Length: 295
Image 1 (cartoon, rainbow, N blue to C red):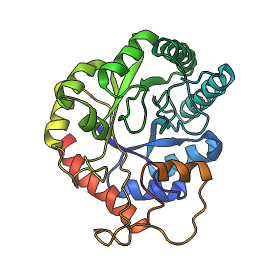
Image 2 (tube, rainbow, N blue to C red; image 1 turned 135 degrees about the vertical axis):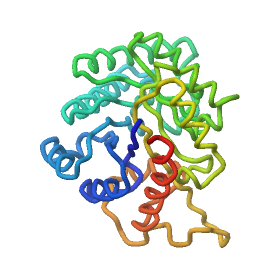
Image 3 (spheres, helix red, strand yellow; image 1 turned 90 degrees about the vertical axis):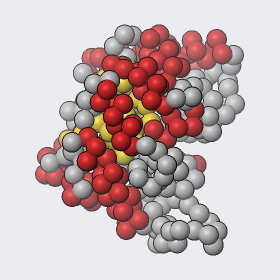
Image 4 (cartoon, rainbow, N blue to C red; image 1 turned 135 degrees about the horizontal axis):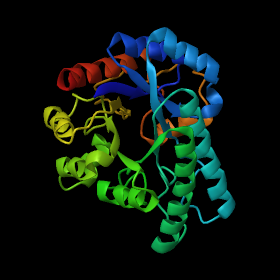
């Protein structure tokens, strides 16, 4: 196992992120799933300069991106988007694309259970075929019920992976597992060798170590199943807008250049544009919590 992180949680130059995570012992990064934001040659150069490898990317399934859409054209455009993320990861020598099938935050289905299952299976198969050609693995990820109605548990993600291919895997996230699973450790065991990626944030979605999750037991269970991939930091710190806040200086008050889609995605998660100091602290705390457990 090794420590990785996403970078969609704060708008900052990639070079700044890479310098930060190298300092704290991260070995890889999951690039934000917005291929238009990254020049491949420039990104490859930055990764090499900082000694960080690309582990993969997560699809930012927002706006009109939805493999479960009733509209065939919308599904086709969503497939094209996922393929573009796969291509980017391939060109950066990455291994994994974490695929969230339905629009994050969408709680009203477009069709019956049978219709949507057919749409998603067909679309994911097309994405998977492209990934195989590009040498990238697909890991479908269940989110909690407040972010998607489509599926929320490891068993459901495995059902989609099984419908696509024996070589399709799943990604699990400790934050979502804590909400949805009867036993999060059994969910990890159920995924077994099909677990291709693992995301971490504490039960309150702050950095690992700032909540109640049992990180020695979680990492121990990953070792038990022989997991040897990334443990990827994905905190989404909720903003406290009351006088009871523990972190009065966590929100960046000065204008920051951030794409409106990314800002909406962050705000839809209850967070905001974080100050560099607060963000840096969250990166450090995750590393201090996880690294001693995976070494």
